[in-house]
Amino acid sequence: MPPTWTKLIAAADIAAAVAAAGAQIARDYGGEELVLIGMLQGGLFFLADLARALPCPLRVDTMLAQSYGGGLTSSGVITLRQEIHVDIADRHVLVVDDIYDSGRTLRFALDHLGRQKPRSLAVACLLVKDAPRAATVAVRYGLFAIPNVFVVGCGLDLAGQGRQLRDVWALAPGISEQAAGDELRAQLRGGFEPN
Ligand code: IMP
Ligand code: MG
Image (cartoon, rainbow, N blue to C red):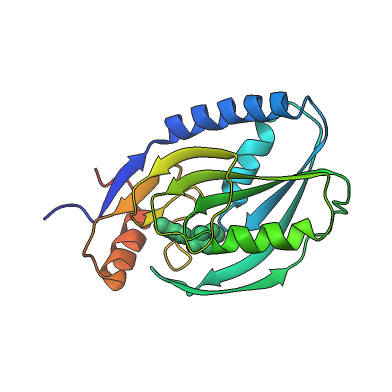
């Protein structure tokens, strides 16, 4: 039987890409202060890594805009569950998220933050999925292009599980959500090195 989860991106490759992105972003903004807005919960891990790779002054805040039903599919309706607390008016804002999938969450975030009149507003995503878009947004910093598969790790979850994994793991097609979740939990108990 083929494995349920296979390693798609190794932690070492993620670390190298984050270091390069940090250096590029600091150059692009000329060392000026940035406000990083991490999208909860999936963007948290990339946010922490990227912030530590940025040789420039920065503030960190988070917002929670949710669409996901919790499993493999999205409900499509986005609601703001937690507002930012930093005043972003006239500041350079970089929205930091785990993945650009349908685009709905990022579109919502950009519209919401844009109304607070930042000096500039751009997006950084760890992963850019080759998926049908419900909304198109410009991802200025997209670190890895991936196929249209379901992934966990580096902040991405299946029903809340798997975010802490250092590598990104792809779910084999045709596996039920129940079986994928059971295998994920079993592997998490054992250290997650299935292949
Ligand atoms: P959107 O469809 O672009 O709005 O993405 C919404 C959110 O769904 C993302 O921020 C992720 O948290 C989550 N998501 C999208 N694709 C995946 C995936 O492959 N695995 C886990 N979560 C995902
Ligand atoms: Mg998310």
